[in-house]
Image (cartoon, rainbow, N blue to C red):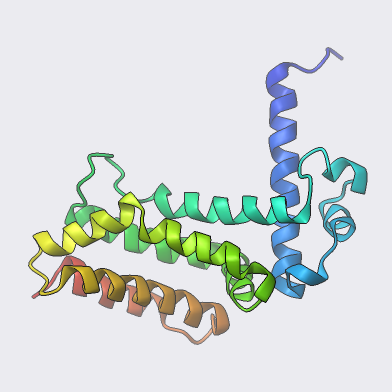
Length: 195
């Protein structure tokens, strides 16, 4: 058997890091951040406690990485052509992808809502909120509403943000009964196909 290549080692490291993040997310979503130890995360990820510290120095660093990945996810489906202008098609795609992401990653959203309720995480969540509100994405959505003749584009951006938050919260707490696909279509109708 030949020795592993640098690319193989990189892939192993990335896979292990992803496994740690997924294990932490699952435990945080179930038990809350303050009740989970690095030992439990390591056990859930199938690695030793010592090895986990090769990837994350602390639970706080791990938590920051999870929040950062959430922010990165927000941008993943936004303005796919990268021209800085949100078209109607791109807005519709963004809404559709946000709903699909929510459906496919419900544990992640459970974790975020649990974080909102924990005093120890309030500062991090405030940083997340500030980053979203000052982002290029927030400004582009406001410009989209201005270009599409919404009466008050600034507050419409807040309404849009609140609607997406509300969809996520309702789905997370009642996934079997919440009519997420119908609600998604109504949001698309409101913002992408106004009468």
